[in-house]
Length: 90
Image (cartoon, rainbow, N blue to C red; front, top):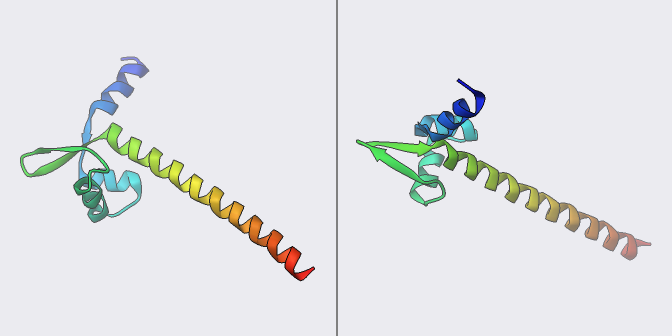
């Protein structure tokens, strides 16, 4: 079996709430909230929620982008405040 086929099989598999929580480093309760709020798509198999691997990875990537944007804004704000303090106290 080639690598691309193995990767494709992994992407197509569903995961449990517990597995998604572990991958995202959050609680199972938080994952359930994400599912209920439509942040990550899921289906049901009986009474179990089944989450697509691709959906979890997409959410994780979006979260990373958002964090980087916030950190960039904070760094810019910090630099502006430092410049302001230099002008006021000089």
